[in-house]
Image (cartoon, rainbow, N blue to C red; front, side):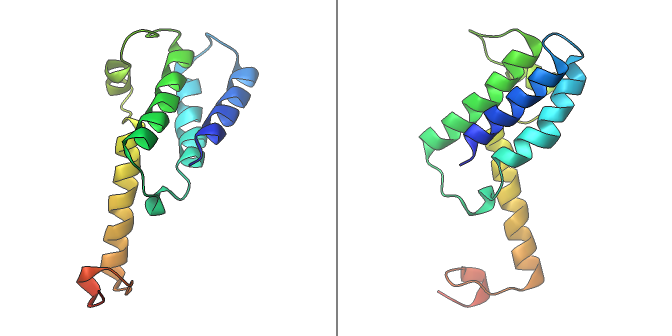
Length: 118
């Protein structure tokens, strides 16, 4: 998992943009630069509850630092109004889309019950 990559990339963005300036631009950079780097290869990960929690905490901390709020509260409302999913949902979405593409292209993977292999 690349949770530390998220922090490194985000700290780079914050050092260039600064705190309290144009939150939406900072959020856009985090969504297009940090989130993909943190989720790179997530389609093949096997995550348990603590892994999902750790990735969600990293993503939630990103929102807390950008907007300077919610340190003792949930950022779910903030994510909703910014049209952003929690990290666990983004990972699950990428996994679903990956397997949909695999099944649609007819590639045969061992262990996949839809391909005739078991």
